[in-house]
Length: 128
Length: 128
DNA sequence: TTTCTTGCAAAACATTTGCAAATCG
DNA sequence: CGATTTGCAAATGTTTTGCAAGAAA
Image 1 (tube, rainbow over the protein chains, first blue to last red):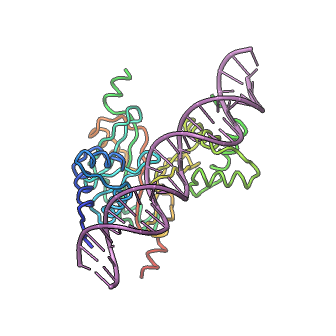
Image 2 (tube, chains in turn brown, green, blue, red):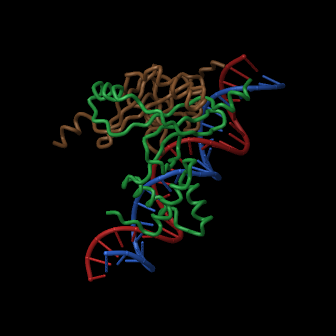
Image 3 (cartoon, rainbow over the protein chains, first blue to last red):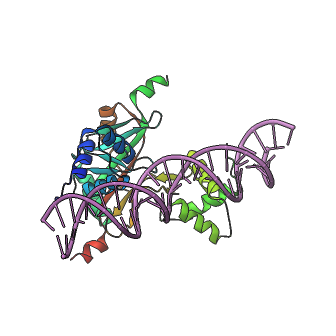
């Protein structure tokens, strides 16, 4: 199952090397810079494969576009509603909170993702 | 500012009456059932307006599509990765957790949204 | 050979835009 | 009247599909 073709490996490398949660289009651009020219469909196929294999994550934060994240440690995201900047959040949820949610919903919870919206430091300062 | 035209009111009513987090297309359908026939652009305009006014919420949960939610109390969502069912989660985050994230990021946090993925009760049972 | 993967173009969606007509105040 | 909103069709942007050709097992 771990069939890392040249295309998939190149896509994986780009995502792992990017720390700005690129969209599929961003990834296309970066591949092109590295002299790879894959079809859009191939990049999407590769991304889908890599997500299924648990090698990267797909994020749905702003509407419309999927973003990809190569950082696999448990983490969350905060988005500045003014400048759009997105930063990673490492503070982890308390375990008893997750248990409580499992109890409330009856779900077997496998993953969770938390998105914070607000103003980043710079935009707060600029507003003064 | 509270300029609730006929179209906007109709869209608001549909969203408020729906408890399944409809997409814009779903909302179109439900409007049509109620004999309203608005242009797509009008529905999108209305949704955008209603979100800006804080009357409904826009959710980005699965890729690609925006979903809308008329329930304004603070709450989160759990999605079953097998059957796609989405349920609401009312358990609230501990306040000191939010403070910790604000400290970590420097953000002024205004909103947050938590998405749980896993298996709902029924799909867990079906898997046995 | 059999199966999986790629590349390309076209298709399918979701959402936005431009602009004239309608409505509101 | 002047400003805002609507409706429509076309444009845009993202992602998926169909299918033939290519690569791998």
